[in-house]
Image (cartoon, rainbow, N blue to C red; front, side, top):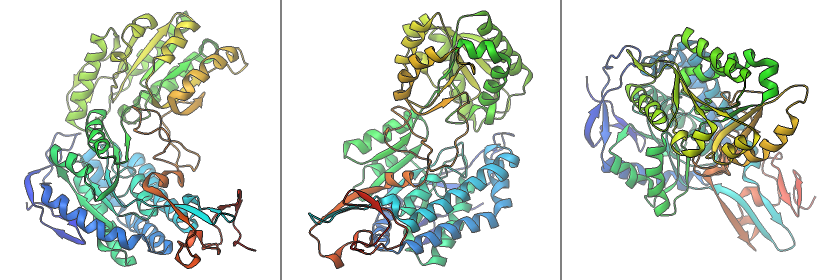
Length: 525
């Protein structure tokens, strides 16, 4: 079978490749027939040049045209739903229904349409006007955005269709997508659909470009290139930190989702009140998609008690009685096994599981450690075990629990379960202020795995959860602001101002901060 082409400068063409690769069906171990190229720097260079030309045009492209692309892209994805779902299922092992067809694909098209609405409205750019000093500012496109998609969401976080892509395009930037090697054909179909929408709406041909794979040194060179505006990355901490270092070295913004344990604190009153129910909730959350969510609960704090032991026994029974799911790749399976071994080497005791199984599976795993042991090696005992494994920390008292919280790294989420009658209120008041600055999203009485596509959502958090605590990867319009730069205009003549800063409100719906007051009115009325 011939090697598939890459999408560069408005053309599907053969890559300047250093080699090829094929994806694997993780459920069967079968090597899939399609062959994809590993691009050299020549492809990166061509993509960067084409994107720079596209960025110049997109900066002055009407938001209606960008919105039409995003909605048209969503429509075209839905038209190829069956093919996309079948392909993604073969490449990831994720269930066709409900996961891919009924949850993730609708989420993806929903994000694209929300981004289109944000582009039309324009309020995301926070236009600000000081009439007395005649100074005006607004967020504007930052330039070419390079997006690395992850392995665990072939649609909703895909570099050529997911949330980062939607936000970057809606903010007026061209995108160079780096497909994930676990689902290259899925990415190819999405790129075909996106490019068809580009042509239909008359956007610059290089608005959307895609490479399948790069050598590590080429990836490092790419993120540091001066022609690039910024980078969106979702993936492993090890890979992300190398790319981040290359971007940091040249002052390049790098928005990364890297690692998260999503601590869950179950207070004594809650455990006594509804321990069996919480064990069921916890197990369901841990095993959702075989634990391959960035918000899977990887660390749980319990207070030493008979109720805590019953909780652990209940979770153990549920893990033993539930068949392990298929992991996304053999690499995920190897990394999970290595992480579990690292946790054990640091002092964690195995409660159940802990062993690799045939067919890219891993036994459902629970480990435990005392609060004292955790505090003796907090860094090693916060090793992320990405997959169907979790660690329970059993503390002696409130003081030890507080000390554990103080030693937690930054996370995407943190959850606190408390008694519904208020018996845990004093402990909650003590612990919530410790957990709050260490997580992007704080939950009460709820497991963290669901990430609603809401304007109020923060899918971000302090390092190492992400590279910057002030931004979110989910939640439009806020997610657009990662891919923008603040532009100020001082005493610039009215006709030379961008539309958002002229006296007339360009959409009639855009909210602008005029002399300290938010307004949708035309200036001077």
